[in-house]
Length: 400
Image 1 (tube, rainbow, N blue to C red):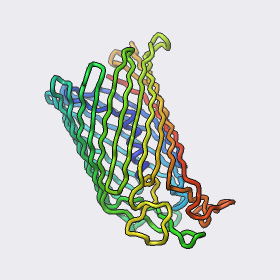
Image 2: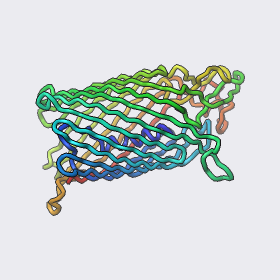
Image 3: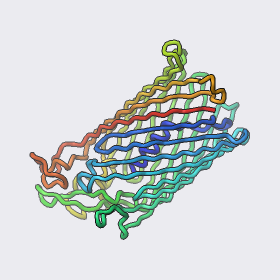
Image 4: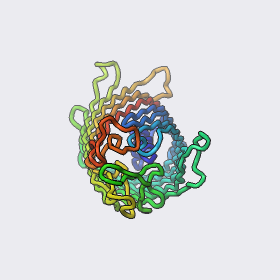
């Protein structure tokens, strides 16, 4: 559930995103995106539409509508629940106000799916200084979410009338961007996130030993609060032949004991339009992520009710992930449409591989919750889990 929402947000930001720099309003544009994620037994796909329009010289408004459809037979589903299908609809409206060297932003997101309702308000300010060589920014968001649990009553999927939980989240970030030379830009950011309320999945369970050859399960137990801190730095260097290389490092830590490191390297290369008849830009990107497990995570617990907090979410396990992505963008102009300053076609593909150090594939175990395998393993000795995922994005943009 949470991963699905995050995926849709990340895909939308990758396609349509771009920081709003103080002193400059974004270009007027319209975008249509299609994305698809396939990995670990989960498929998420759907369209997203965005429109941005300036009102005078000091105001710009943006509207975005996203639909994603998910079908899941993931390892979590196979060991704790039945395969399911769901759909999320998300609408976003935001506005930017330019006042001198400062840009003020405010927006609202409403996300609706059958078992999760989320409302988020966000705002921010950025300011240019020192001859527009330095930009500082501050952003804040606050979310109020309702969590439900789907059950089947008379073969009809509906919300469990006995289950309704709430979760609140707040996020703060401070950013600094500095032009060092005509070819080098360095930026940094610091983020603080706090969550309170129902923070686990209503469907996932933990497993525990009944005896050395049999296992049982019970609902996860999470703390009611969660706070995290992250600091990142990014550098971009423009090469003499119009290409650019950039690198990023991010450090993450939270109150649940997770420590994460992210490193990313990217290369952007424009191709002479005389070769393929247009303005082409190609991009390659490699990202590496690694994290330690949460304090209350275990793949299998010694017994039922082993501790006050118990989790078996693989996203709280120890693992590392590699993501390799390529992107091709074709920019064009249609002379018969003078009102169209330019258009672009964009195609992106990412492949992600995640290797887990302490999360095992319980589908292969004796006394498993799914179909009994032909040659079962004893609980706690199953193969370590590995996730391979593919993400496809295609979108077209029109700039006015």
